[in-house]
Length: 177
Image (tube, rainbow, N blue to C red; front, side, top):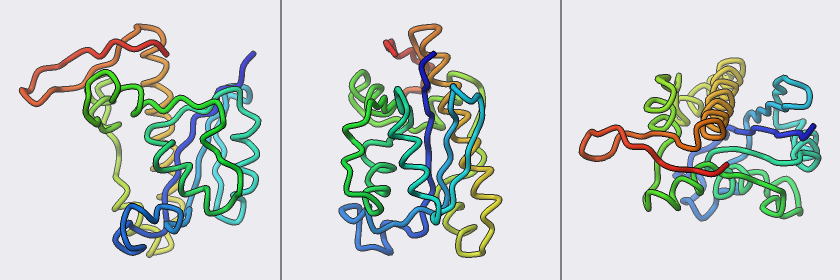
């Protein structure tokens, strides 16, 4: 049985606080969450356990996430010399962007495909971090991992996912995950 690890993380700082999007490595991880198909469960990692998170990603047969190549892995590069982009990875955003030729949000795809919305956003998670509300961040991040997993599984089963286009029409995106 292969081990797919779904992954997301939240940060300690915003891009504005570190001098822009060219400094993603300086954002710092507040919480990372994985869901492993091999153990059929979630793991929550605080920054002090980031090495354990990186080891789990390295052991995966495939890592699946949304915008992980450009964002989540870059945040983790602050903590490791390993190029995480070399891991067997499916970045759903990259895959979808290749089809529709523009960026989609996880929320837009999940809403149109599954009828569910995200519970918060990254800016809310930053506010919670400043307030020391790590449990809220972990819950939000777990939910994002769950949505990512459900979108991926839907796409595998139906060979398509959906989004609402700029004209307000629900549109299918053919995929091969």
